[in-house]
Structure formats: C-alpha cells, structure tokens
Image 1 (cartoon, rainbow, N blue to C red):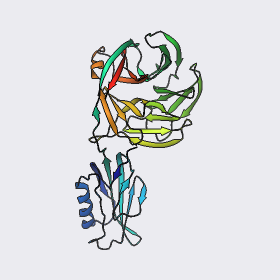
Image 2: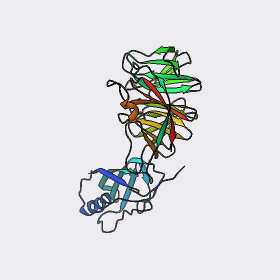
Image 3: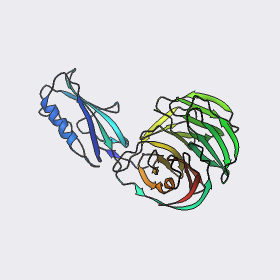
Length: 339
C-alpha cells in the first residue's frame, strides 16, 4: 500500500467554498486563511496556523472530515486519503468562538495514471435488447443484470451464445443496476429505489434489504475477497462486508483529477477496473488508496455499435483477459491488456 503524507492542503490541492461563520470578522484571520487557500501545496510541505499577530485569539481548533487535529500549529495529515475533504478551522478567545473558516481540499495522487492499450482477442454476440447494468463471468457463462424500470431482469447465458439458459424477473417498480456473486449469493443493486436484492443460483429471491446510507445511489457492485465493493455514481468507492456492514470508502483520483460517474466494476489481480459513465473509458484503481494507476480508452468499440446503442457498461474477466460490453450493444469484446 502506498502511503500518502498530506500536509493540510498538500500535494496538489483545490480549495473551494470558503465561508466565514463568525459573528466578528477578524481581518488578520482572513488574511492568514486566504494565504493558505491561494497556495498549492506539494508533498512534504507543512502548514502552520499560528496565533502570532492575532489579538484576542487564544486557541485554534481544526477538524478535517469531522476529525479533530489537536496540534494545529503544524498539521501533517497522514493517510487522510485521496479526494475531497472538508476542513473546518475555529478560532477561540478563551471559551468564546470568535471566527470560523470552512473549505474543501482536493488531494491528488503523486503520480499520473498510465495510458494502457489493449489487443482484441475475440468477439462474441450480445443481445442488443439488453440494457446492461451488471455483468460477470463464471464457468463459461455470463451473468447479466439489465436496467430500466419495468424491464429489469437477470439472465444467464453461455459466452458465445445469446440463448438464455436462466432468467429472473425483478420487481416492476425497480430499476436494476450492478450485480455480483459472493459465497453463492447473487446481489443486485437498484438505482434510486434504495433496495438490494439477494438471489440464489436459480435467481429465486432470498431477501431484499434497504441500501446502506453511505451509498448515494446504486450503480456498480463487485467482490474483493469477502468484501462487497460498490460505486454510487460519484468518485467514491464503498466497501462492506457480506451483511452490508460499512467498512470504509476511498475516492478515485490521479495526479490531475478526481473521477466521478464511477459505474460498473470488477476486481482482478489487486486492482478495481471501473468504467466511467458516458466516457467509454475504464480506469484501474488501487483499492487501498483510490489512486488511479491506469486507464484505457474503448471508444472504438462504441463506434462499432448502432446509433441507438448506449454507452460502455460491462466488465468481467475470463482468465487474464477482460470482457467488455455495453447497454444495447450487439457484441462482447475480449481483450488482453497492454500495460
């Protein structure tokens, strides 16, 4: 695991939405905080919030993402994590709150995402009527979850054929999203219905549960060991145990940007492969830190589809090769990745 040592704004950082909630405006505080906001900090930098020159200020308290930092004189944020974080600085005179400054920082990775290429290995038919939302491969078969309210379903078919060997209907009021399998249980997200369905191997419903509050919307889901890994359309990636007890969140970021619209995903050999909604690209993310280490442009596959076909949205692995498809696509593409 690469460790990111971030100093109160470090790396490259973006600061937005500063607000002053104080009842008294202190120009020296404003000057000090403004100077902080205007700087771009690099790894190894430090920041000191001093009381020097601040009359009637006896104490400064700092919170980052709601966590207190007891030594604001020189703050080093070790393992704060990549992505956007909220900073709140409070200035006190004795027990009286005199001024507050609140703003966001965006912490970037210290290395660029590599541009990966691919070789086309094979193509297979895909039902162009399927609005693909979830997709995985097991023992020669494709398991697929489709979307759209009133049309969502589960299907199983052998790779190389579109003949459905097993189908399962989803509640007509739900918009189906990503699917995955853990310990023989098939999980299916819904988009905005705030429901997660659990099925057996015959697509018989075991139960449905309420989506955890950490998830904004249901987009993509995969497994990593005994963990369930979920995207919600933002730059965040959430980790849960098999009973959906929350464990942690990372954010997908490289040295220049955070990647929002994270969608369908698959874990393979230490990396999370995630397609970006409406961009026809796949990013490879370090699941420990959130750093985007590689990305592939698959626009050429989208260009082969009919005009009414939608975007790339389906990742699976067949051995070391990747299988990709999309919403209303007529093909599944097998590629080998060239790093």
